[in-house]
Amino acid sequence: MAYDIATIWAFIIAFAVFVYVVMDGFDLGLGILFPLFRAKRDRDVIMNSVAPVWDGNETWLVLGGGGLFAAFPLAYAVLMPALYTPIIAMLLGLAFRGVAFEFRWRTQRERNRWDVAFFLGSLVATLAQGVALGALLQGVHVEGRAYAGGWWDWLTPFSLLTGVALVIGYALLGATWLVMKTTGDLRDTAYRLSRWLLLALLVAIVAVSAATPFLSYDYSQRWFAWPNVLATAQVPLAVAIVTALLLRALAQRRDYQPFLLTLCLFALSYAGLGISLWPYVVPRSITIWQAAAPENSQLFMLVGVAILVPIILTYTAWAYWVFRGKVDPESGYH
Image (cartoon, rainbow, N blue to C red; front, side):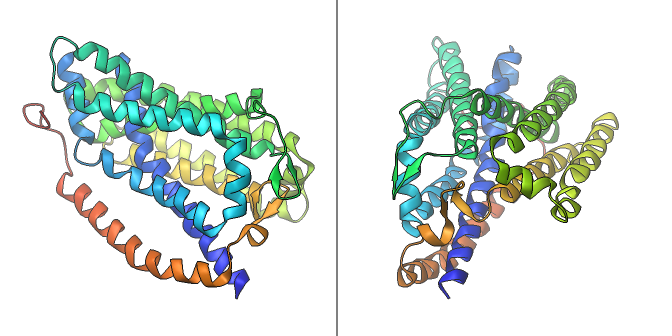
């Protein structure tokens, strides 16, 4: 029973983190792309494309972080000291981005400064998320039941590589979101950016994928040992197929397909991450069952999640449905 509950909670947290990544990823990506759009009108349209939905996306970050604390307290206690710096940088970036989003509408004279703040907040938050992911993948030094590493263990070439890869990925999400939500010259620019960003993301995916097996013998065994390779080989094959479809969709100037196919790329990358990590919540040190809270506690929280998650999914889907379609440049958030 404890095995089943711990597994269910692991998938709940993994689901919450993935939904956060894809939903907050495109508006962080828009912030990263902001300096490439110089015209005030274009920037206003970009902001209006996410104004109705952007602040609800952090709900999933709260669920992921809060769920980790409640369902796997040992993992939370080990990972937080290991990742304090990138996590704090991420939260500060998200807060600064939120303030900039609101304040840029309240002033004309200082708007350019808030635009810079929106860009920097988005870039820092994204880079910090990617660095934290890389630091998690490369492993955390654990002795007994506590973090035993140093303050700067998270900062390595591999963690910086994953940080840059996530910046590129979020930028591609943002560009394909603009393809889907805008018209005219702004959409044309988004098409061009999407093609270049897709090529850059492929390079980043290959680089991270090539480096990951060298981090640990366990990773190489999971990906390349027989007969595991029969299943794991399907992930890069699927990435190649989705990439070809995405390139075709961009060449044919489809509006909705590029964004949806980019989400598929993120899903496949996330699946690859799951192959590398499962069933560890702290790689090579602590499994989900070792880190799990008491069974009664997990069952009690599961009742609340079973009620709240469908509600959150419903109102989120409703918000996106209500504000579907292209953004009108003459109307929006002011």
